[in-house]
Structures are given as structure tokens and as C-alpha cells.
Length: 471
Image 1 (cartoon, one colour):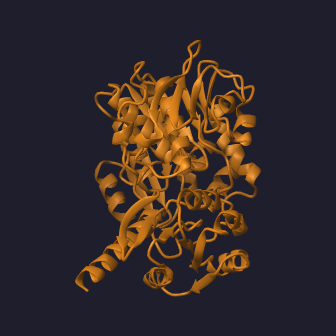
Image 2: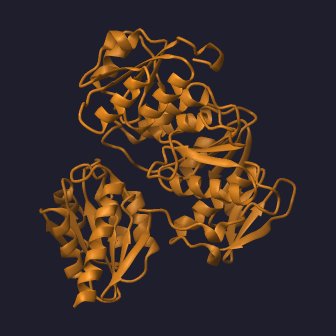
Image 3: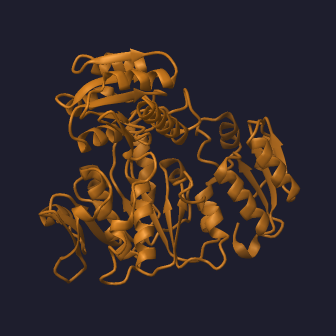
């Protein structure tokens, strides 16, 4: 579907979450005949379906009409639909191809795109890049996979009037898997690790979808890559375009790949190097309000990306000190009787949880568990040993968490509701400790999503403060 050929073109959209709803609104706005389908039928899906039906869409809930979908010229699949879902298997058997929602949106986006992906840090990096651009005077809009009220789906950005000067999209591996023509002129890869082993048959398959970022570019693209991550560097090597690197290991780290500039940390200072120019100091680590060394890496990536995305010279790091920690990402949520509570509910894989642990000083009581994604929790042991007072293991993955880390650190297994999990952590903590929610798992055994889980943790922290205050 192209802007000039959209009228009366048939578009089928599978999945009526936020991205599917946005794609339907965009397709309707472009004059397409829209069929929307979802296997669910309860609220809020029903409410979204009713609203779209009132606008002229044909909506089917509680199942899929494969023939109706296959008759569409363009099929858009929401990221929550697993590749092995029966509806996709049926379409695949008919030779029907589909695209992701950001790919569909990109067909109506005329301005330049900065695309950010990676295993961890992509939300912070994308949000900070957009923040720096706006602080530098560039009219930038943020969206994509970022969610959480931080930005809309790509399709909503495609409908903005007037169009922004620059769009910054965070894209997941699920969304990258089904792009065809979406072409970033700036692409950022924060890092590559292990994630979503409940959806992918192997790490290689997961990385293959991440590689679509580089495959989507051309010789005009600028790549911002993590020079401290061998997997990222191997994936980027040989790709056409301009290469910028970022590194926590100083200028030597940033030179791990022949590059045309980049950003690096040296002596507590953040430096930016443009092609043909000596590096210049643009900020200090003390300027950051974000916790953790990994967030310094995210800041370096964002500064390099902002420079490549049009931030004026000398204004690439403008507003860095104004950027507050994002919700559910190493978010301090209070202190109760000398114990700090930190919400890192977005740490939904082992690498993210390990990074959170490494970022905090003092004894830690870790809350780990949730929906099992198939990772090896023993990867937490190097940062738990000598740092953790205890691990509170809970949820569907709790038994495996306890079994795999219990040989190295004290573990308390809690099988009850989340309030009991948090109460157990509170009882174990001592003044000067940190109670850290960094589950290393997704949240769907107890919650709607990681935000719901983080909100519950925040509310329980507030309740504990209230009780201590009343006492």
C-alpha cells in the first residue's frame, strides 16, 4: 500500500492491541477498506473494535477468517502475534506475506527515521535521543515499540500534522522481523544478548531478526554501534554506510571498528568525535540523572545518534541533565526504614537483571521470577555473589530461579501473590540494603505487562512507607 494508491485498497490487520488499532486508524485515514481481526473478544479489545467499526472498519473478534485476511492486498501483523500462531501458519500455507505495523506506517512517513533496537537499553536510548534532539531545537517525535505512555505506535506518528522533522522509533525484534521497505537513515544497535527464548528456537534466530536493522539500510545510512559488544560489531561489520561507535572503554574502544566518529567515556567525561575532528567533551557522568554504568553507555549511544540525526553542532548533549529515569527502569521508588526500593520491572531477561544488580552498591534483596522465558538464571550468579543478601524467587519461574541460583546465594521461595513476595523481601532487608525488582522474566503469570508489575511494586513501596510513617 502506497499513499497514492491507498483508496479502496484492502488492508487486513491481525491483532487489536495498541499497534493494530493505530494501523487501522492510519489505513482508514488513507481511504483503505479495512478488516481487523483478533482472537480475543473481551475488553479492551471489544471497545477498540467497536470504535473502529463505527469508523467504517470491518471487525471480527474471537477468531480469524483466514480467507478474508488472505484476500487483502496488505496484511499487517501486530508484534504480539507469535510466528507459530495458527492464523499465520494458515496464511503461510497460502503463500500470503505480511508486514509489521512499523513497516506499514513507514509507507506514509516522508521524513527521516532514526531506528533504535538492541536487547537492552533501547527504550532509554530512543527516548534520550529524541529528548536531546528536541532540546537542540529539532522537532523530533518518539514512538514505536516504546509504549508505556512514552510514545505512540509508528502508525500514529505517520498521521501527525504537521509532520515532525525527525521520527525516532524503538523497534523490537518482532517488529523488525516483518519489515520490507522501511529504511532508517540512522540506525542504533545498543547491544545483543539473549532474550525471548520462549518465542525463538535459538539465540541465532533472535539475532537474525535484529540483523534486519542493518539489512534494511543502504549506503546512505549511519549506524551507531556498541564497540564494547563483539556480537554487535560482528553484525555491523561490512555493512554499507557511515559507522559511528560508542564505548565505555575510551577512545581505543571506540576504535574497535574503523569508524567515522562516535562517542566514548574517558575519565568521567563523555566525548563526541565527528569525522575529521578531534574529540570534544560534551558532558560529565555527573550530569546524568540515570543510575548505572549501562545508562552511561545508553547516553553515549543517544548522543552519537542525536548528532547523526541532526542535532546542531555544540547542542548534541543539550538537555542531558534534564532527562529523568524512565518508569520501571532502575526507578527509585522510595526508602522504607533505611532500605531503598528500586523498580526495574523492565528487566525482563537475565542480562538486564544482571546489569541492574551491577549498577547498585550495598547488599541487595532481589525479587526474581515471573513467566519463564527459557533463559539460564545461573547467569545472575557472577553479580549476585558478594552483592546479594538474598533472592526472593516467585511466580511460574520461581522454582527454577531457586534451583539455579540457590547454590551461590540465599534464596527464599514464595509461592503466594505478589504482595507476599514483596513482604518477604521487606522482611529480609536491613537498613542500608536495596530491595530490587529486577525479575529476569516477563510478567504475564501475574500481571498484564511489566508496567502493571512495576506499578504494583511502586504501590506496595508507598504502602510500606505509609505504615512506617503512621507508626
